[in-house]
Image 1 (spheres, rainbow, N blue to C red):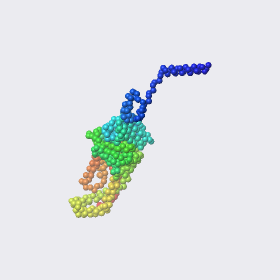
Image 2: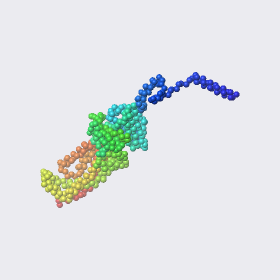
Image 3: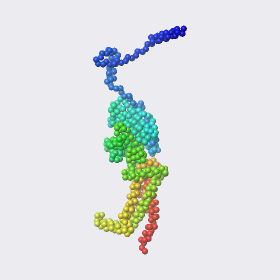
Image 4: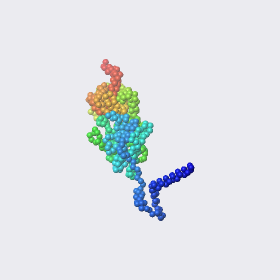
Length: 558
């Protein structure tokens, strides 16, 4: 019974499947393409449909391989990279740089310092240039596809940002590796119809956006092009660059720098090629256009070009190597003194916490170390003052005698006899008088240079002064500096005649006017040094007072 039921079920299933296949036949399968017959081998005659498709197939074969898939973005986007010390913003339109701010340094408004010049329109930092005008213009308008819209750079590991663009004729890629050291590795590649084009990376025009107040400081210089070659550091102001460019070979680095900031391309081989170009731009706060430099570096070698953008901090640049610290103008002769002074100023600041008071403290320390030499200078000045009246008499007698006249030798003999009567030797006395000045002047100039190039003073406040790198807004320090210099001259005995003394009294006024627009940090240093000199002269004169009184008593007739 069960077997019959099973057979009946199988039969009914077969009947249902047969009826379904008859009522719903399957769709016809497409025929496989008929292979082209080999020459000399007979083949089946083609049907009408394949005959119509044959011309299209032959046209497709003649067009070559299938086109490369296009790579582009559908709209313009802002791409941001943030690190501990900087924030960088790009537009994917042209993969162009919009902003590069430094978190540690503030502008006059208190916002992070901007390194991208606002005057750049035709040229912007990190633009790609191939030398083919049509390609360069197209790259600026292309909507690149970025690997990320936001990217954070960790202190311990690099982060990579890529921009890609591809169409049937043009292919371009820009890659930036933000390294933990602060450097950025740059690679660019441009192809036109499969052919590799030479590529350069640009920075400019200039760097940053200096304010009218910064330009008003005495000694301010507009951004310059700078390169390190085998001949040393070569600096070119934009106004002195030739047209169309000043080309360099064998460069270790090349870029643009201002007083406190720089953007430098580092050649991967240490001997790359680059150029500096002049560009006329309109700048806010300037009545006429300025000529600013644009730097270009060859990036066609396949190896990444490194980029530094930031402050001209000598110690930080020295740690990065590659000779970057040489962009800081410490001077070839004064450099061995300036660099230790920079480190000493930072050490003092680490204990005091204010850059203004650190300048005061370091100035006092240096003057304290030079105190013995200055004391000898005061002693020598007093001795020479004693000889003053008699010396002037001798000079007056021979005033009209020509320099080459033999009687000039008689004058020298009388001067030597004068020194002998006062128990002094003319040669040794000249040495004692000049040696303190010769030993102290290099340190004074080095201290001056150190304060000029120290990035730490930019934005540092002191008492009523908001920025030690700017001029004193109330002009208190220049006036005080000139007054203390006048007081110093009044205190010190002089060997000059009255007419020469009146001329010398004009020096404080001249220097005071000169120092009006100098940075407040320099005025603070000079004022502190003058105050110390007044104090030391007073102490030295007081210590020498008994000797002077004794000498005066001995000269009185008995």
